Length: 143
Image (cartoon, rainbow, N blue to C red):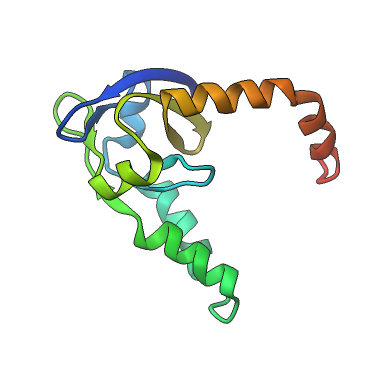
């Protein structure tokens, strides 16, 4: 389970050290891909296989399903932690998320999200300011 938020840096070679707390879940490998809201998502290989199977079952006759499949699958990259717990973030994914320098690694239960630090701070302030409204809207979907 991935929870919590941690500030780290991505180096000039695109290497990102993941929090020690999360490394054991990713030792067998992981997949990094474009996420929603302009961040990157990292899944363990097992979680990725579950998600990819669901995506593969989307109807290819629907434009939004094809677009979502392309966003998630074509942008995905297999990765392995190096000896010091870093992954390599490909240039095209860094560009997608606007990542350079400091990033926030946020645990989202079954995935990690990687955000540029400034975008995360702004997003978090917005979420916190609207938390009551967000909670009320969740009631509509049975939460």
